[in-house]
Image 1: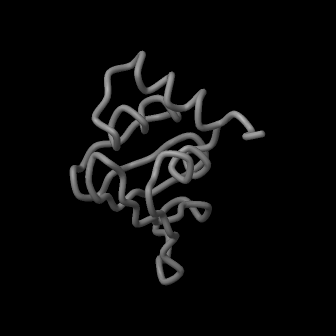
Image 2: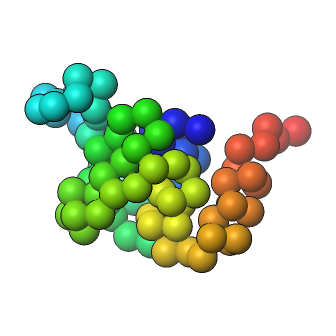
Length: 88
């Protein structure tokens, strides 16, 4: 799952920054997100992500969920599975 998609699933509020100009990778986007774990400024490129405030990054939706929700691995996986399921 791309980190952008995961961030949208995990956040209470999430929006891309239209004024952001990538420096290295042209597909990088900057997001402002609020979760139950706090407020974040996250750069995303494919599966990779980087928290500019905490100066920490990772790869994949599980790492991102663990970081922004401050959860252990198993709980992060459960949250992603539950939120990725179509409702109905």
